[in-house]
Image (cartoon, rainbow, N blue to C red):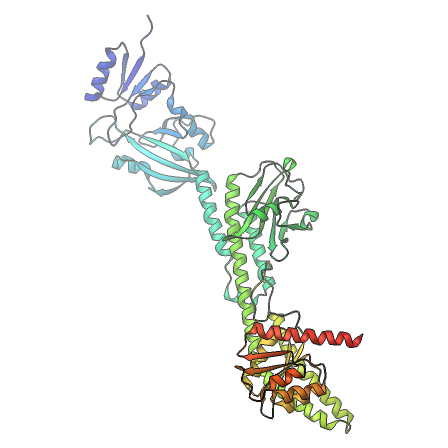
Length: 574
């Protein structure tokens, strides 16, 4: 006859346990009782008991039937039973692992077992709360800087008497360090993003664009090494014009790798080129067996590369490497992607500041130019008039007048040059809009605009000046002839209605002064009572602008006139 299996009933009898005892007695089980939970658990752990039955109420530990074989040892978290003095009277082996203890913790104070941890709440006295309220209490513990535990405490009653004080507590302890540290890192990345793009008014106004970029690079490196704990880093920015990936920041990389020219192309440009071209992150587990990997950091065995994305645009790449194979996991990938977004936003913020500064510089240049063009033209006209009538009298005076002409023209060039120098470059070579869009075909071409309307003369300065032309103006025909006799021009644009003559007369006289000087005539709404345009066409007029004309029509007309002038000059030289 086999020995009957033992079932231990712990605690005083009640209706529920009495019924169970009777059922198991009728099935040849050996019923053993214990009035004390601690004694019952101790006997259960000796291995002679097949099952442990503990009364359960709505406010107590719902320990029902726990089979022999110490089932609690297989739970993924620690379970501990405490007495009223918070001393450990039983625990599974997971508790020792969490506490880093090899010896038994029986008899130790719960808090001493963890080395006097910091209680984080929400309940700052979870054990006393469980005793007093007879309900579950929860709290968090921190041990050192990187160990966090979640504690859930439940009271254990030895009888069904609702007024009885709990004799024991059962606590469940779970290691949540990884969860907490990941949450902290996410928050830190968010804060780092705020810091990357945070510039004080003093930094905005007092620092140059290059200084701001250096400050951003220092911040990126700081957070990459201290927050993400990546020592080797390379950031490349995409030059949209050439599709080239230029190095912004490189630490721990071989010089040959830093100097390597890479493009946003998935073929023959390594992992970096692939990531920039596809916009997808790339985790290289083993550099020795990865066909895309190109040598970067010395002795690198694994790498992680993510795109710098701003919305749907790839601004560049962010690469980190390690001397250990498989050094990066999905968490590292996730965190680096999040941080890279913050880097992209910070770079875009610098771009916006550059655009704002560029716009301000362009607007200031145009405002200054608008204020000086009329006085400069007046000086040119008056000086040319004096010079023409003074030739042959006093060479030193003529020399001074020539110097005045040269310096006066130089004023506008200096203003534009200063404006160009004030315009900063963007951190990653983005093409930013500017008021001055130089036309390669018209740059440095000198154009004389003849019109009695000051508004037209001023508009000519602004529109043609933005294209890179040197614009000078005259009020009437006689003034235009004086300017043409005195200076070289590539094109003359004249209105057909001048105070002293019509367009045909102006065109014909300019042709007498310079036979091959291109002339464009302007007329309002086709109004030409003297038939100047018809007559001028008979003398070789090639271009007419009908006011109001579009800017592209003006550009096309001037380009054509300049081209004709250059062809004639080439034929003459040959």
